[in-house]
Length: 305
Image (tube, rainbow, N blue to C red; front, side, top):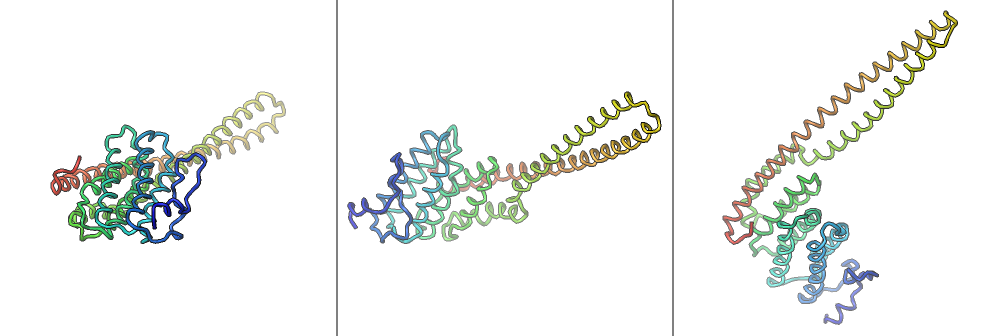
C-alpha cells in the first residue's frame, strides 16, 4: 500500500474538518506497512495532543475517548504491525502527551481519557516488552490516583489495565508483588463500589428529605386548619369530636415524621462512614502511588517526576 492508498481509505468526513482523518472502523482495513500505520497514528496523536494541551477545559472528552479507543482497536486488529522503532515512536509520543497533564493547571481531560491511554499501553505491552515502561506506568499510577480523588469510577479501569500488563516486564512483576497487590486487596473488599453505594445513598437521602419536607408542610397546614376550626365552630359536640380525630391524625403524622428523621440520620451515618472509607483509601492510594513511583525512579533515575 502506498501513501496515495492511505488517502483513499474510508475515513470520517466531518464538516468542521477537525477529525476528517478518522477511520470508519478497522474491519475493512488491509494489513498496512509500518509507515502507513504510523502516518495514521500520527494524525490521531497530533489532534489529541492539541486538544488535550490547548483548551482542556473545553475539550470534547467523548470525542477524545472515541479516538483513543480507535487507536487501541487499530493496534489490536493486527492490521498495523509495527517493528521496534515503530513501537518506540508510539510509546514515546504517548508518554510525552500525557506527561503534559502532570503540569497542566486543568488536567481534567487528561484524567478522563487516562483509562483509554492505559488500554493502549496494555495492548502494546502484550506484543512489545523490550521497552522501559517505568515512565508509562508512573503516568498511569498518577492518573489512577487523580481519578479516584475526582470520584471517577474509571480509576478501576486504569488499575485493571495495569494488572493485565505482562509479568515478563520486570518492573510490572515488582509492582504486582507489592503495590498493586495492596490495591487488589482493597478491590476484593469492595472499594470499587464505594462511589456507587454512596451515590445511591445520597439519592435516597434526597428523596427522604423531600418526603419529610412535604410531611412537615402537611402537619403545619393541618395544625393551622384545626386552630381555625376551633376558633370558628360553635357546635360544641361536633367540634369536640372533630378536634379529637384531627389531633389523632396530626399525632400520627408527627410519629411518621419522627420515623423519617430517624431513617434520615441512619442514612447520614452510612454516608459519613462511606466518606471515611473513601478518604482512607484515597490516602492509601496516594501513599501506594508515591512508594511505587520511588521504586520506578530508582529503577529509572531519568524518569520525570
